[in-house]
Length: 304
Image (cartoon, rainbow, N blue to C red):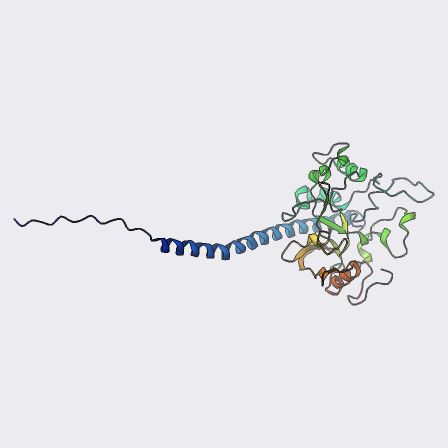
């Protein structure tokens, strides 16, 4: 019988160093391409969630107006933070030591939204709209609305107010009659917000928008009131520029209740921060009005 030659066992196949390096390089290139795409997709989802929040708030604002003779919820500081009683003839004292009994819009809409979570944008790292440290007015509103976690004296603890009511949106304070042309804030009476009938173009007039917070001493603060360009600075740390957190723009609520995203203009030109008036007017020319009396996007209202 012929002898059958014994087969030599094959060695297991293995990658060479060059092949491994090529594979690693390909993976690194794919990661560099895909990670930004994943980040953009994640931010787009957050932008959509934020817009959904604002649509719910806008609907609640309209429901509130129907119940209160077409008066919108308060977006000014003076309305809630003023004495409930006359202190000087027919005038009232204004300041953070007072609460008038009229809630600011984030709390005024709660009977309609029944959800405090809609007040926070998922892309906002600070959510400090309600974080005005030391303010009795802010604290009293939380206590009287029975917001979970609110306790007397919490206003003196950094970030306690903001953590109890995370807030990422601020209202257009110029919708309050207190800020009308010729109005004297030093001798404020019991003025209310403008009624819907006062607006010729409610679909263009913004009610609230995304804002950011300024952080000082560990406390984040933005306020529930804003105007376009407010606090603009070259470093981009002001309340308004920090609200530019969705694809180079922000979400808006308008006085007819609808909400939409819009791209922001440049806030810094040649290293210098643009003035608030200039920024406000640029939004107006884009169809986003700030002043109740605006009728022409190309004409800045007199006295403003």
